[in-house]
Amino acid sequence: MTRPPSVALRQRLARARDLVEVRYDEALTVPVLAGVAGLSPFHFVRSFRAAYGLTPHDYLTRVRIDRARERLAMGASVTETCLDVGFSSLGSFSTLFRRQIGCSPSAYQRAVRPVVQVAADLPRLVIPHCFLRLYTMIPDSLPTCP
Image (tube, rainbow, N blue to C red):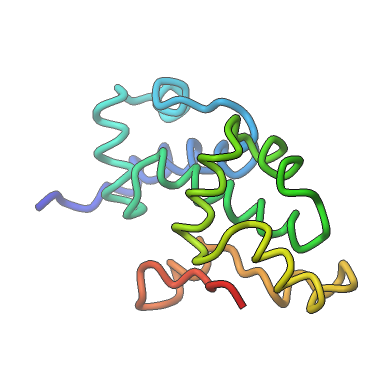
């Protein structure tokens, strides 16, 4: 079992995590993120997982899926959403979306769209996974398809 990262290391990892949150639609690789944190790629992956419970790739995928949920709820097409959040393959996007959310992107959109008719209502439906992971005891408590 690994020890939790130190405060200084967590601050370095937070820089890479913040980059993922802002530039999720770009091709972010482990070497790029490790460079932002000032760590070797292998040490970065181990430390990131120890700090956040996910590998950098899994975290990036979660962020992308969360942003996709927001876009789908606002009425964007599945293909447009797939490309806008950084996925290059509609098939892999749909598979990952189904795995994390519990239904296909189009089924999610059909179920959610009647609930979110005004843009101001969107925050009531979508809670970022980072808040759920921080403030709940359940590690993977993403809201599932309505």
